[in-house]
Amino acid sequence: MTDGSEAVTIGALDGVRVLDFTSVMAGPFATRMLADLGAEVIKVESLEGDQVRARPPKRDGFSAYFGTLNAGKQSIACNLKSPDIIALIKELIATCDILVENFRPGVMARFGLDFAALREANPRLIYCSISGYGQTGPKALFPAYAPVIHAASGFDMVNLRYQDGADRPATSGVFIADVLGGTHAFGAIQAALYQREKTGQGQHIDLSMLEAMVGMLVFETQEAQFPGDARRPLYTPLKTSDGFIMVAPTSPRNFEQLSEAVGHPEWRDDPRFRTNADRNANWSTLLGLTELWTQERSAAEAETILTRHGVPCARYRDIGELLDDPQLEARGAFARVQDRAGVFKVPNPPFRMSGSRVEARGTMSRHWARTARMCWQRWE
Image (cartoon, rainbow, N blue to C red; front, side):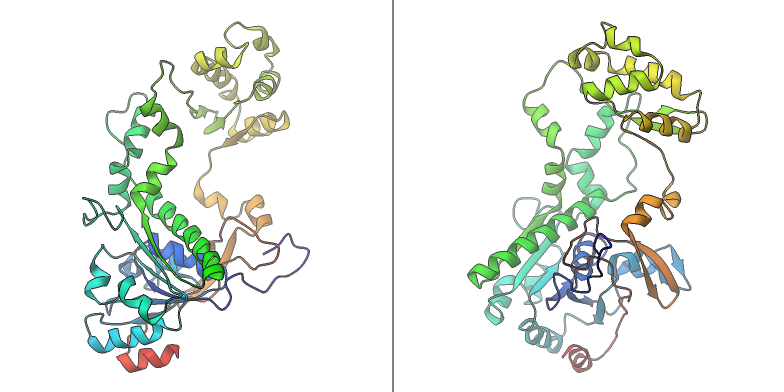
């Protein structure tokens, strides 16, 4: 996708072949982004299929959740305990540029498909392993899904500390560790492809979801080492007459714009708000006074007025509203893909490239249960 001045049909990863041994979310998120840039992604599933195929929301038996993570891919269903299948995969690997897997550490080695074994067949192979804790260390073999990593990384306890009045960590529903781990894996693979252009050699990428989450806590890891006396200013929802709005007057200019927007220019001379330090010390007071203004207006009205004055803000929206959001529509943020139950929307990658097509491909990964030889013929 481009700025609309021209139609780009070339993908940055056209001609790149990926063998995808991933399931559930973190790995499939990474490989779908590879497919979005034009890579040929061959998803290798068990005979039962990726478990997400059975997860809602479903239409006519087909999971849109699975479809979002696997748009643009094709699948083969194999018994990886079969010597014949392993032999065929080793033949296929010679034609591949990238392998991505998110088994627990050691599983691919038991299949005879670890990096050390496959690099002999293809020295240019880029092999990415995604796991909860990484391939090494005392917790490497511990089972882990995103909610477990949220707890282990400190992320949930950080959020608890930021929630006044809460007595336990928040319930997990959005799997941040999976998306973040998959995104980091996607980036690392691009770097490895670039290095291979210079060296001619592939390499192993060891991606830890735990470390991805820890790396996201930029301020908190420093605060833990160098604790201060003052609490960090927190951004709290402000009530409106029909919902909530987020207001973030972080800079001196933003504060001036806010005071003008809400009709209180005298705040600029208030000793509580004169400097950044003063405002930080009295942050909750400033937001409380602002909320007196927002409560008298609808979220949409408050957003309109504040935005007109240049104040960073946004009303809280349900996810359903975003499916037809004018900003996202203008950006081409959603693609329409199709499986055997029909057409539905999936998010595109959040970046655009002037010389490359960047969007979900319209076809869907199907589950091809075949004999070993037929699986091989499918991809020759």
